Length: 309
Image: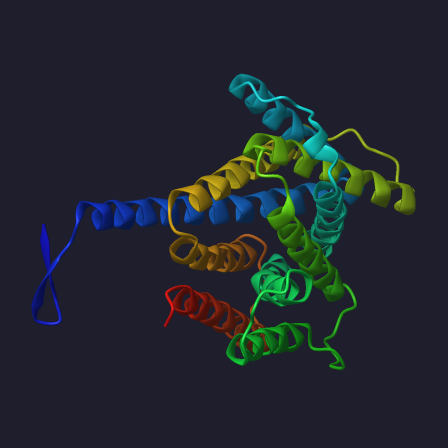
């Protein structure tokens, strides 16, 4: 098979065609994952308007862990191995608890669109953390992009402005927690399957919910039928999102699939505006633009370096 390019005929080998197809399929899985994550956030926000957020996190985490345990059982995976309590997994669990707790609070108490935008800075923090923790080579161009992206976060939060709310720090803390989890995942044993990671990831949500419930001191309430449906929707969306994300990362090339993570920003903003009646400020538009452009530049730069350019 041949294709036209720059006025010359170029040979497209079967391997290249398969890679392109895998990248397309992986990208579609990534978009599906980000859409499901945004839906999950919306259901959690709905449920937290009636139930204590700690209770919401406990029910959500327990439901997700049970579903992943069923998937692991069907797949013949052992629910517990020594690798599960290895040092990287313990660190991963601590960061997962931090990320889930504070991001869950951000979704409940701040605009969904703002929390979603701030979360998109996670890859920037991962790049910086990889340089510090794993000694990865990060040149000045990518360091500059990281700083510009973090400036975007500051623009969104607007510290010092009259509109500044301390609650906006919740999304920032959640983002840092998720970045730490992603870094710890790099060191996690490769023998641990996606289903097992899902089980312990959702159990971390349960721990986060228990911690906040003890701190808040709010009694658990009996959810109505409507709220129960929201919680069920959040659990199903969360499991679909996690499974789709793992499928995306294992189908296409990371450099081709990862940029589509930013589609979550579009889904989150759309749900925030059209479902919850939120309004976009100029600072949010400018800040999200800085974050996305910085993240895409880092991905592009990393791909060029990996190709030896």
